Length: 116
Image (cartoon, rainbow, N blue to C red; front, side, top):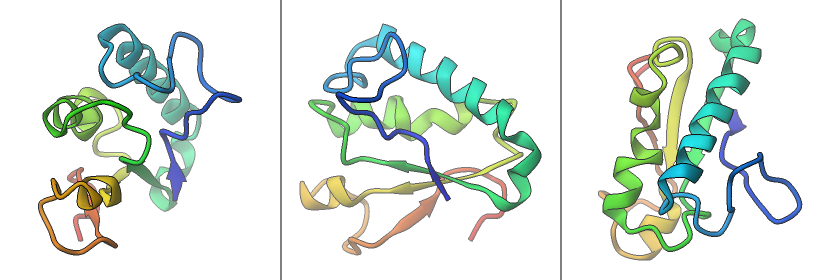
């Protein structure tokens, strides 16, 4: 399992503000390009790699902004959608009372590959 959106002050791809990257379209576009390039690089391992998307660093993004950006990332990466299993850990949404579940340990598959 690889956390795809670990972004912070000491490490962040070019063009991304780790504090507000989901609320700025140009930042999210830069992240999408980074994600696509990274997944292409590791695609030989796609059968045994799960891509974790987590909400803890969503900054000021609302639940709706999250759904349109990172929550929708697999469909924005059509070349990788069926190669990797994308999972969403929604602990932050759960803590804010905006999750679709009462289970704080939920990992939800957000891609068609290896639905569980």
